[in-house]
Length: 211
Image 1 (tube, rainbow, N blue to C red):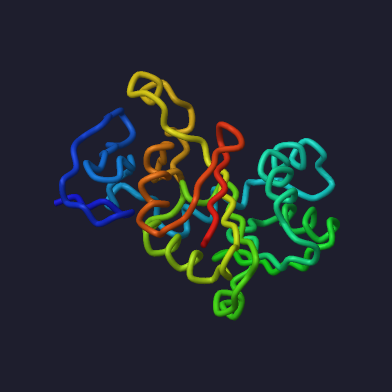
Image 2 (cartoon, rainbow, N blue to C red; image 1 turned 90 degrees about the vertical axis):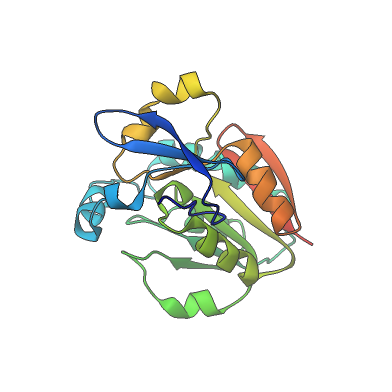
């Protein structure tokens, strides 16, 4: 029996199927997800990430991250401390915030696995191109909210589900490491469950604020 990895709901239905995988949708939070038995092994997942060539010297990558960096930076008080969760093999967003005067910690399960940073609290946390890779997004996102100080921000970048027709032809679902797909409705539902305010600065970014 399938179970939603975001909210735990057991009422899910097949949303889409292709020659690669199946995709289910939750009836409660509307998350679309790949069942766990169709996930990559940890070794195969890391092999995919090892191919990424992102770095702070790549101005195109900086522009890409700017879709979250710019609106979030504008909200932060001077010297606010942050955590870049899922920083990847070439941490860049953390460098951008440090250049803006914000001390940063980084965490990545494969490339920067210092668990001590997950025991601390922060004024803001970022997760760019991360949530679509999470096998247990409900658990991870709740943990990140717990690490936010009151008034803190959680900034997320991930491409969003729009329509069923668009999903069927969406390149984003073909990446074998992408296993969870959020819509605006999913983020709004999740924000309400955790008493967060939510806004969508861009079509692939969301900023949540803890009260």
